[in-house]
Image (tube, rainbow, N blue to C red; front, side, top):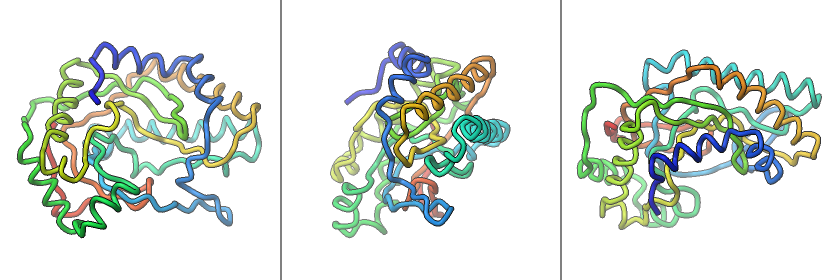
Length: 264
């Protein structure tokens, strides 16, 4: 498994926000099973794991961008409610504190249980990752990575905002650090490996019910209306570091004092 070349990455991201691609993807959406609507409120389902993650809130220049993401979620709610009525219980909008970019997947769910919990490595794992980071090629750059967020796309179970890059070198910075992390023997010994290429994205919404054809059509209409606006905007997501994060479910990504960080 390798990351995309920069040209292929750019081509992929631009295609994923096109009207035709979104309609095609909506035809196959399914329930994520990450959250449940219980007694008029959302409850998270357990999903355990670790990742190397950059929170959008990590960099002070992202403050206005976070507000824009919240506005997009509100517009999504209002437009869908106007078209479908009571539909808000069919999807879950992630809280702003959870907005993030996964830089490197580590272990989650069954693989987390098998390779960390069953081997009694839960307490030692932050130090294992710290040792791996110390073996990586870490550089301190004058400017943060600038990821240009270009529009909403549909994954199998969610809606996410996709990102390209202002500078090709910024994409190289991220893919270099990913390769450096995955090439550490101490992580490979725990079956940590690259399982998918890097995709710049921030997940905003999880589908948590079945949608009929009319609802899918309205979803597509709303996403495309929002994308028309986003195409005229300059929304930049700034990153200059990433760190180990622990999660018990997919709406909260936790850190501790002993969790290592690495520059990107």
